[in-house]
Each structure stands twice: as structure tokens, then as C-alpha cells.
Image (cartoon, rainbow, N blue to C red; front, top):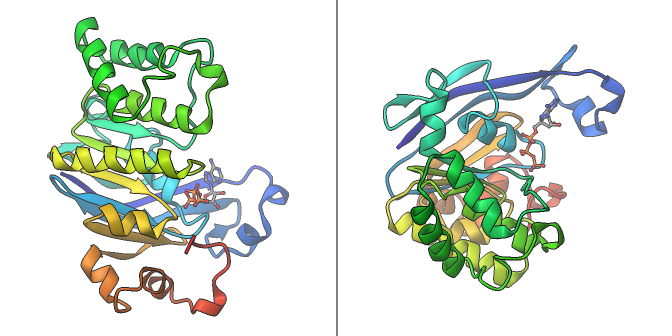
Amino acid sequence: MIEISSLAKRFEVDNPKKLSEQEKKDPRLKGRYFQSVKDVSFSCGHGEVLGLLGPNGAGKTTTLRMLSTALKPDSGTVVIDGEDVLANPIIARKKIGFLSSSTGLYGRLTGRENIAYFGELHGIDKSTISARIEEMADLLDMQSFLDRRAENFSSGMKQKTAIARAVIHEPSLVVLDEPTTGLDIMATSTVMDFIQRLKDKGTPVIFSTHHLDEVQMLCDRVTVINQGETVFNDSLAAFSALSGGQMHKSFLQTLKMDIGEVGNVVNL
Ligand SMILES: Nc1ncnc2c1ncn2[C@@H]1O[C@H](COP(=O)(O)OP(=O)(O)OP(=O)(O)O)[C@@H](O)[C@H]1O
């Protein structure tokens, strides 16, 4: 169980000229600071999958980085199984498996070595690491490239390796930042099946996405962030019911947008 309350994070803007046109107009820009996350709250319980939605730049990655301890919030709380993540980041890190948007694999190591290295960092013994890698390689369809160097991996191979690496320590919470971005249909389906398996085992999973079909397929809960604030946080059924089952309309409704205003905010 993870509970996130009133998270906030602002960044100092080193060079305002480097901001995008959209960011320059964003009300979150206040003088020398950009308030990426203003007020985000949600929770995800045993065996639940939560889909984190929001337009580009809404604050999803910043939120996920905070709850996985990669980034320190300015305020707010993150509690996992009763443990305060901010007060005990080392204990929390053992409980969380985090896939960031950049896979950051070691190119000179093979897929297997990349995963095993993380297992060793977590203090897991070699035979357990080997057994877990075999299991995940089967589940994620990695056997054909597991022993090749990562430097020439395709996006899908990289992502699968990064996912296996993120869960090698069998975390009690899994956080995935856009796990299917850039993947083909087969790889996407494999990753979706993998998330379903985590859910079946009771592991809460939080993942950000722009793909509403993935949300419909897997999620129990939906949280929408817009301009750094939670604008929707409820069950998938409640989200779907916002507009009679049309997911993209529900999404736009949470953003208070019409279909005509839709730009690149969502893949329909
Ligand atoms: N280290 C940083 N310094 C300054 N601004 C930042 C930093 N990290 C994020 N931001 C800004 O905060 C805002 C939110 O970014 P974030 O990456 O969390 O959005 P997102 O919802 O994940 O977007 P996307 O869907 O495009 O991945 C953006 O305007 C981004 O440029």
C-alpha cells in the first residue's frame, strides 16, 4: 500500500530563455521558479494497478521520481506499508522497483549482467539472482538476447532489461514511468502481461502512460495530473463513467477540455 499526500516540487529556472513557449505561458512559472508539482495526492493498495495520466509536462515524471526517492519533494508525504519514504529513503528503496524514463543500461555488459549487477547491489545471493533472471527472461521474452551486450539492443530489448532489473529484488511496490513508450505491439503486449502478473501476485503497480487502452485493460485506479495538480483520483469505473465509457472523453473532461481543443495531449 502506498499513500501519497500533497506532494510539491519546484525547480529553479537557470535560463528562462531555454523554457518552451508552453512553459513560458504556464501559470506554474513564478519568477525564477517553475512549480512542476503543486499538489499531488493518490493511493494504491494491494493488488491494484494505478494509471497516472496527464498532458505532456503535467508533472507525472517529477511525481514518480519523488515517490521512488530519486528526487526530494519540497513538501508532502509518501508512505509505503506504513513506512515514511522521505524519512527512511534506504528502507523505502528496497521496497520500491522503479523504471525511469531513461533505461541507463551499461552497454558493455550483457542484459543478464545488467540485471545481475542490480541484484548484487540489493544483496541478493547469486543462485537466487540466476533463478529470478531465468523466470523474468521467460515472462518478458528475453531469452534470445539476454546474453548479448546491451549496447546494440533495440528499444524493446532495453526496456525489457530495465524492467527486469527494476524488479530483481521483488519489491513490494512497482513504479514504471511510461513503460511502453517506443515499444512495438508485441513488446507492449509482453510488458502489459508482465504488469498483470505483478498485479495477480498482489504487488501494487503505478505506471504513467499516454495510452488509454492500457489504462482500460489493466488499471483499477486512475489519477490525472494537470499543471502539477491532481484533477482526478478514483476508480477506473468512475473515470469511465465520466463520459459513458469513452475513455478519451473522460480524460478530456478531467482537463476541462473539449474534443476540439485536443492537441498532442493524448494518443486516442
Ligand atoms: N530538473 C528540472 N528543472 C527544471 N524544470 C523541470 C525539471 N524537471 C522537470 N521540469 C519541468 O517540470 C514540468 C513537468 O515535467 P515532467 O517531466 O514531470 O512532466 P510529465 O508529466 O512527465 O511530461 P511528459 O508526459 O511529457 O513526460 C515540465 O515543464 C518540465 O520541463
